[in-house]
Length: 165
Image (cartoon, rainbow, N blue to C red; front, side, top):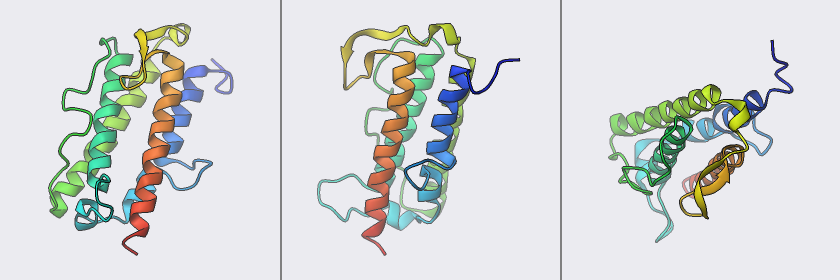
């Protein structure tokens, strides 16, 4: 049996899981941050030109799925739904569905990373470095990037939430 403390896949999935639903170093997880947000709040735009919480959730969902696809062997590309897809509507049911989809996308990402061969973590994902597309980094660097992406947008959600308290 592999020692989890030395297993790079276990360490990477732990990093992703802590940020999404665990106990991250930086504060509240994404799931915890979203728990108290209702549909009306998710759809509000308190800062002109800034994304809504609902838009951020849609963005996080499509990128988790895109990275899961890449770990499963797909060529890197933009998410089929677009970088910033239209968020769910403002009803309670639509908001709950959006949160469920984010949770599913996150679970798909974790499964894809767990299935990935550890010996390929240092291989490049995609060709030339393209920051917007997230290519040209190793698979391991990509997981760290996904974790950073999640923390960044969770911080945005935290600030937007403060606008409504």
